[in-house]
Length: 325
Image (cartoon, rainbow, N blue to C red; front, top):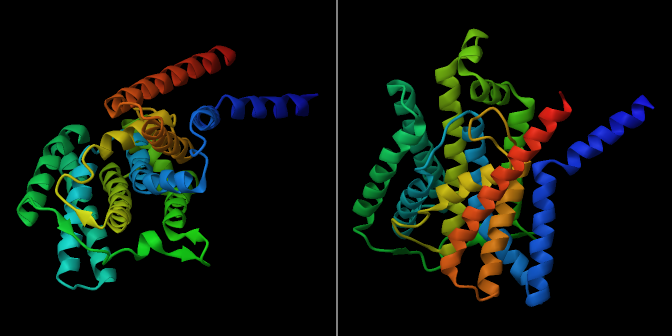
């Protein structure tokens, strides 16, 4: 009898979890959209949705670590624009693609660590710090390009076009590995425990022996690496870059994290929900285009979905709290 109750409790926990609720949302959006436009559930459309989700997904995975730890980086969009412009310029000057990729990732890591270091040194909220640094990164990108678009003419297409065994796109594998890596870090490493500890109660984490300053810098390094890889994937897909590329992605990434059930107050969340949030946002963007809905409604829909996710989280937390007495 006791075993039956435990199984029932686990099943109930899964069915009321944010990832499962988002999975249901995804199914509903897919079925409704496909009933209106039968081309929605074709491989071409699904491929487009997943391709769109690749860059956003990696940025969101990194943002998940920061949000759970109680931080926000709203400069990631501008960081992507800077990295893509820098990589495009290097490629057009005939630098080796592998070296360019490494330098692009290192550039994003440097920017992200700078954000974290300033936040730690000044004891300032990362939101305020990155509000300032995003303008710096944007200005540097403008100075590098003189405001002009950098076109590659297919020089860097391998990442987006290569298929493993001629079937499975490499870009999807990179996306999956990104999320799996963050899941392992959060759930099975000391760094992951520090993410949750600092996000829950920074003072208590300090008293228990956690090096707060070093840990925060680690979190920003993780985010920077993923933003750098996302920049590579986006440059490969688009084959062009300009200073404005990536702008707004930071809000979509944070939106995906919040939709996925991570608490904006820190200490709670995971990448499974974030992944579902990314797929839902990418799917909705494609659905709006395919249903010929005015694109001006797109961000309104994003806002409504985020509010619904917050409401769902609040109701679930209240229900769980009431059930636990």
